[in-house]
Structures are given as structure tokens and as C-alpha cells.
Image (tube, rainbow, N blue to C red; front, side, top):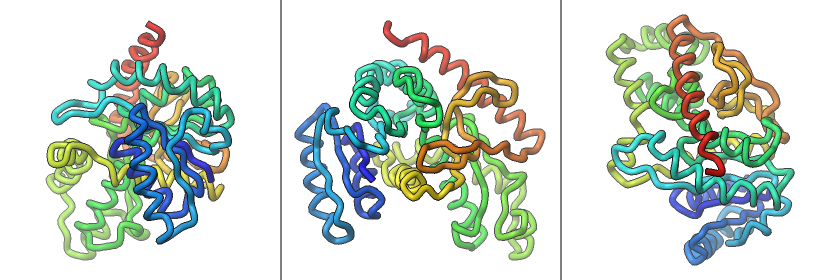
Length: 314
């Protein structure tokens, strides 16, 4: 699989390293406005490649994206401590106006994988700028948030993260929806499993876990300036699903004609991914409260997406 990565910052370089070391990508093109930065990151990763794979990575230009199956866009203004993803909107729309048309020109058959924040809104912007079908414009969405949710649950319940099935839907951000009503450990509901191992899973504990998921990025940014490893893992998982054509169900973000009555909005729902991108979107089972939360998240994303689209070419 050949993958292009736009942006050689902390997320782009971590994603490149992950894709290379797992063998998901056999060719990687790393592009950045700072050519020396891209060249240095590519060289460093190339020196690690022989330990696990025979992949190749190089710094390049947009023309080098020819033949890429996936182009990951990480480039964008950095999120500062205390800054919300929405605050990034205006700056990143302008950046995308210079990037996406170039990707569409040189890699017209690729799948766009957007992770620049605010990811859901920028996926909508990328869809508009690229002219690609909606099946081939994917936001990293809440794949990382879902991993955070499952990780915290697994640690608390004392089981493997792979044995916990729980999703985060909606916005990749403050209005995201943790779906407690259908979450399971094995074949038991979380409450049933918690009771079986004498763990308390009451409203207070759920609120604590909810805070740990929703505010994880802010805590990481406060401590080290940026998140990178978690999102690199999420991007690798999405690329693996595309490369293997394995029809994985992931909570990626994409354009939906209707979510809880909100028309034309990009956010995360359980989605089947194959080699062509989005194969099928699943309507999840939710409680009445979760339906209301998802509607609120969709309304928020719709409002900001409309603002972002209005900024184009201004």
C-alpha cells in the first residue's frame, strides 16, 4: 500500500513511523512545507524500517502522491493548551484550500483520510474542495476516542482492551457521545460484568470515565504539547482496514445525509470500511438520552460546518 502523508509534524511523523513499522504501508511519501523537516523525519524512519519491514519512505512533493491509495492529511495549525478544536477552524480552512486541490490533482483515485482538527469539519471541507465521492473522504473521527473509552473501561474492569466493546460517536471533540447503553465486556453488559467482579460502575464512576475520554487530548497537550501516538495508531488501523479489504467496523467520520434529523453533516457513526473506503454505515442502538446527545452533537457540527464552507475562497 502506498500512503501519502501531508504534514511532517508530531502526528504525521508518528503516523508514518507506525505505518512503516507495522508493515501496513510499503511506500510512504511525506510532504511538508518545511522540506528539511520532512527529509529528516523520512530519513530517521527509514533507518528503523529494516528492523521490521522492507518498506520505503521518502520526503516528496504533491506530484509524488501519484498512485497513493490513501492520502492522510495531518497538516494544520497546532492546538494550543486550553484551545478547543473549533478555535482552529478559520486557520485550517485556509490551509486546506492550498492542500486538497493538489491532492485531488495528483492522486484523484485515492482515499482522503483527514485528521487535522477540527477533524469532522475539516473532512466536510475536504469533501467540498476535492470533489471526491463521500465514500472516499474519511475523517479519523472517534476511532481514537473509542480506543480511549475501551482502554479506561478495560483498566477499571481488569480485562483486555480487546474484550471490551464500546463506542464513542458524534463529534471528535467536546460533544462526543459515549455509548454506555450497548457497551459490553464479553457478552455481558458493563454493569453485569462489573457486578460479577465486584466493581462499582455507578453514575460517579461513569462520569469519571467520561471525563477521562472527553478531556484526554487537553490533558496530553497540557503535559507534552501535542497528541501523536494514539492518533497514529488510529490512522494505522483505518489504513489497515482499507489495505486488507477486511470490512472492519470503525467509528470513522464521514458525510451523512441525515443524523437524528440533522441534514448533511459529517460526524462519526459505526462504519464498515473496505478497500474503496466507506462501504456501509450502521445505525446504532442508543438510549433516549444518547439519541438526544447525538442530535445535539450533529447540530453543533452542522453549524460549524456551514461556517467553514462559507469561508472557502474568501
